[in-house]
Image (cartoon, rainbow, N blue to C red; front, side, top):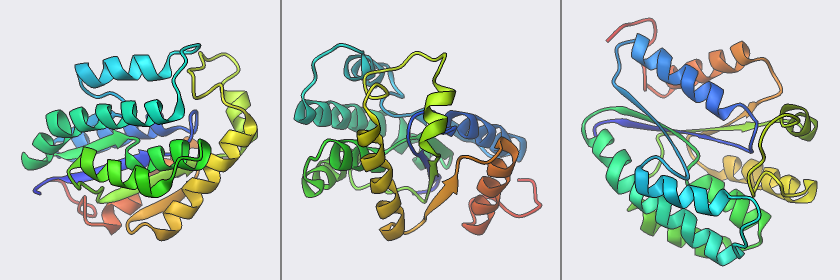
Length: 210
């Protein structure tokens, strides 16, 4: 694989989208070809699945939810991510397989082995080169979402969010190339840590322009 694959993980409202956009702009400014995408979604077909699975009030059972996420991922990976990596680009993705383990595994209680098997099938075995997991205090979830639209998963209760956050912490501890970032800090501090990690992993050259 010629390109590099960076995944930003974490709960809703933790600042992933902000940091993903900052990272994309940083890479472009350094002369790298970059692609910014997200899950679920990222392609027209995958975005239609996203609308279905996240729409508030829709009755989606846990196992059906899992398969919808994996269907979206399979489309997204094969249509967008793999071609971009083959072309030598840096792909920045908001969420990937770890989110499914955190939400549908730890949160919903679906067997992790089942999820990991489906993840491998949907991704054709693709693994991120770097995974950045943003976790914040639960109080910020409420504060940041006070005036925001809440999708079906954002409407889950505090107990669900606690199980999901525990899952992220446990997965970071056992996943090579995964790092836990404190999302309670200010945007600039987090951005600097992200850029330092890219240099540490050789995704960008230190103090150099391509």
